[in-house]
Length: 461
Image (cartoon, rainbow, N blue to C red; front, side, top):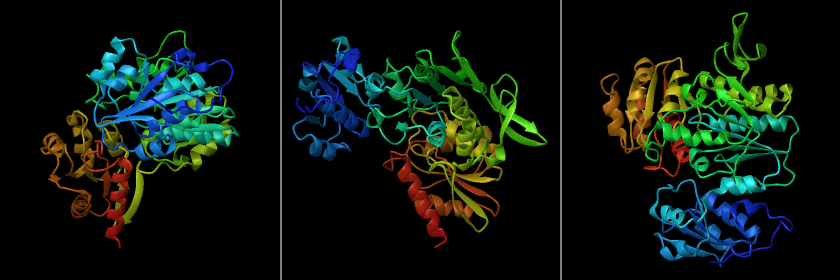
């Protein structure tokens, strides 16, 4: 093992909670993507010896690692016993399942196994707002960050969204806003956010979890500590996470039994807090019923952190959404084309379809992650004119949907866009909401969304 650097903490070591003694720790980083590279940078800044392992021959951050830390030990293309035997600590990237035999063996040997979130929790001095859920977490994370920025806070935003959390660390930060995945949460025991939310629970990553309850249990870890719990009254699984003797705030799309809801004033829907109207739903920059719920969650989190209502309302009005999330690409011959490539699970696909008023040609498919596609049937029967299916699990989608709507199988996005154009009628929408991950055909959901956008724009060229 190798790679040490100048320390930036001289006195008490906040990493003692993890047993990371700078003189004797030998850390093995398992997984060399963006997170693994950020862990390497962090450990080097602390003067902690580390090496890196990855089952891939050419992991995505290999070149950057070798340039920054040419002396670091790197073990690729398999699981090298010598690297694991030498480690005193194992830091596992979110993409690596914890049921790997080498990880289980390390735990049996009482080697500490954790992720970047526990490192962050040890070091961060400013309060943390933590956000998770099956869907909507990137939107709410971004919204809360914009609200804090509008309120003049020195805020850092990232985690599962954008910048890896360890790269956010800054002694000048006044607030951290983190999007957290179930994979990050399941390997953390030290996070204690000032305010946290689980936005919703629907089946996702069923290839990594034994059942929906196991997935929900991983999400629930975000509520560790005594911070404010922000809970979705409309989601029974989330509602069941409420703990007695904790500060709680409820949000939901109704008016009753919620602290943040939707009230009707003179026939108009309004975001409301404790019955007080705040903002007309028509003035929210992001549209769709699911985004009203996202806005309510963001306001509840902002209130928990003492942000000004003026700043929060300004952010809600100005934020128009993130790329690849219900993003209108074009209107061509009376048909609106919408990119929701981030809809990587069935819950997100259902929310996207439910928010549309027009008949829709749905483009879906990819890696289903063990999802049960039959839950799509009610909303597809109501909203979808035809379904164009592609990718690894297109046959499973076709099996679930073919008796309620016409289905067509295609090989790639170009064929999907052209087939959708032939099926759509004036006044329809064409929606890319795959209900699946993208890794069978694309680097990530962003690339998939960009390919869709390029193909759509090519129709009008």
